[in-house]
View 1 (tube, rainbow, N blue to C red):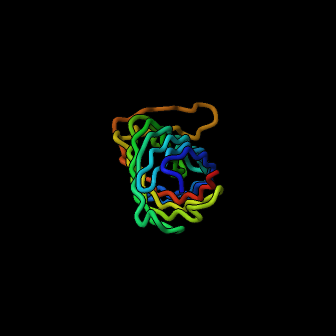
View 2 (view 1 turned 90 degrees about the horizontal axis):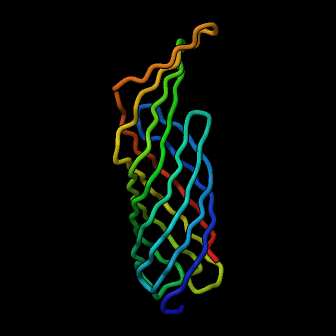
View 3 (view 1 turned 45 degrees about the vertical axis):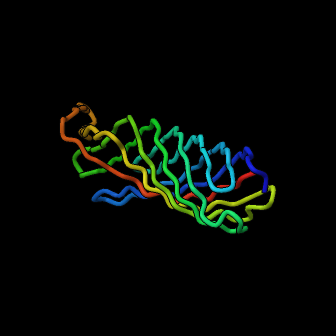
Length: 168
């Protein structure tokens, strides 16, 4: 392994909203990494969604790799970035959604496979925590008079994410 190297990664993401109503999301990401034996710096663009919401995120982060002399190594990481989270529900009378954008913080742990090869694989568990509260938006479902209201009630929603990333 070289002392420092640049890697480009593309991957698949799956996530779960970790509030009262667990919702599933799916999508992808692109990551640029500068990696040394034990430390790394990441620049990442991620986006995913589903029927009831989604997340977009642009972040800068870092990480520490344990067992740097091994071909399979665990790691921990952190990041901070700007992003947007939205979730929605249907309560039979109105569509209710929580939306917001702002600073997001991420914490991750994972495994890096094939560290001594040109092409590598990362598997990663990550929690993204918004640094803001989301605003509640209610849209009534009456066809002739749809009403949109923005309420001050807010919700704080972390998201759990599983990533599989191919690095080259």
